[in-house]
Image 1 (cartoon, helix red, strand yellow):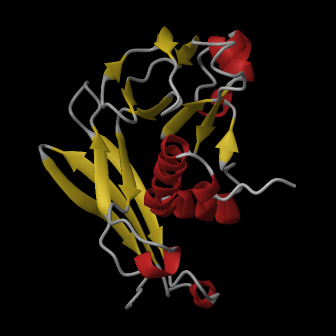
Image 2 (tube, helix red, strand yellow; image 1 turned 180 degrees about the vertical axis):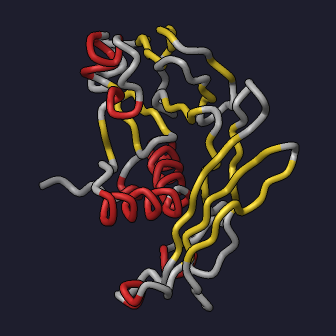
Length: 208
């Protein structure tokens, strides 16, 4: 098969690949937390919109919502693009009700419903749900093992109705099954309320 390492492409393409990889590494704390919910509760990591928005009938029928969009955990909506740019320069994103949504890259706020979105080569449509606290790691590293002891960055996407948000992060040693002892981990619930972010519940006793 043809070589596909980032450095074999022209500079512009290589920088886009680099940005995508860095985004994936920044999101590892969120991925890890979502996968832990799957392992312990059976909640799907990647799921259809109607899983989280069953009361919105358009999540069952809207063509884009059904065929092109998915949720990653309960906080991030992604709209996939499957055609080349010369065939599709814009798309319609359906944002489920009753949530408000924040563009992942720009922070722009959108209400529920269909929204026209122009496409470019540097991003795909992705939105965080208002009312979410999302754990990320912002320090750029070469590998996940290098990131293990780096600080977390909590992104708070406020719900406009009350300026509140909730979220969760799960942490263990990332290497062993010691967490199965029922205490060698940290599982924190976060709450932003009255202009204060705090841990509303703490489970586990991770000492590292």
